[in-house]
Length: 347
Image (tube, rainbow, N blue to C red; front, side, top):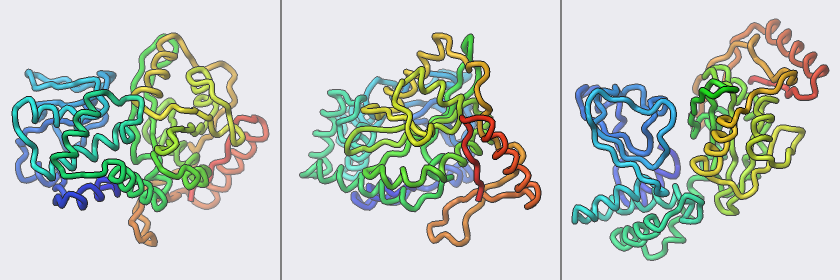
């Protein structure tokens, strides 16, 4: 449970939900309705596709969409939040959601739509926020959103680089004429992007390690300021830089490791559709690109940091010291030959 969800649970006095793994252990044949996603790559690994009886979502049908052997309930609408769909369904069935449920749905819509200011916001989102606020007895929606976003940003300061890169990351598969493979796209939303910017040197090597582990062709991380509604994109290698330049064309900053994305703030509307369009139009990795940062000679694993009071996951080097030193010397030598290289340090 992240800090934003914890805030909403406490605010509306809702008990923390049980892990799906525990529920399935007790009843392996439990029916499952997927919400806010329908790609198998984003499903909890404990869920079998044959258990899925429904999908409620607001995202595009892209690669790795769930395939079932039997008809299931589907409700996918181009609205700003999946919770808007659920709230609307309550009303169309002439049922009033309980106060606590209305409050949780309200917080979810405010989060998804960036307090109704994000580019995915629709009139339905605005209407459901007004209705849910009345049912949940919320007098000041702006105050609720402010408190919720502060709770969300508070956790980020304590997250490890592993948590920041992997916390809200989705993968997208492509099979175009010039590019085939998966792209990972992570998003970090915060009220204070300077705190996250100060940790770029930690996140870049973690992005490279994550790219290797998940066998991604590219990986991006967008840092979104949810107050000022602006963002920037971290670039961990020359392939990412080339694709980002063709897709977004923003100014490259911080020695080539970051691109200014301006007012783009939504992965669903501003980031993935643009990348998809460029790839479908024939983008391919340019020839003679400088070799990107590589940790192929460095073995590592993830473990909970016993020294961290928050129980963060950290990356730990498995390679002998001699092998680590040799690998780092190799990377440094490559950097001297290619301006596009970035130093990789694994704690």
